[in-house]
Length: 106
Image (cartoon, rainbow, N blue to C red; front, side):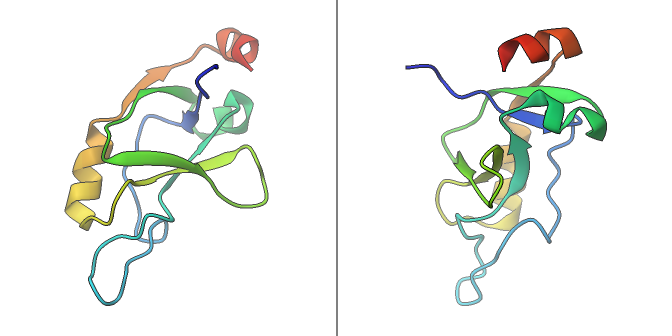
């Protein structure tokens, strides 16, 4: 079975508070929202180039979110603090994908 490939627009994975959801009782991030990625490089090329996710730590997961089936989000694998999430995102390895190479991978 092939591993699904995801792309981020631009090289930053810095989350904004609008991208995540906090549990009001615990103050921890929920596992339902995070920074956006797509399974198509064309979807993100206009946002600073397509960067392929090479690896993510076990503390994070990629889930499909929304009506667009190509849209996914990098979310906490378990409830965690804002700082833990930001630190985990720093462990994600992104690699710039050339346009021609990106088209061939879809």
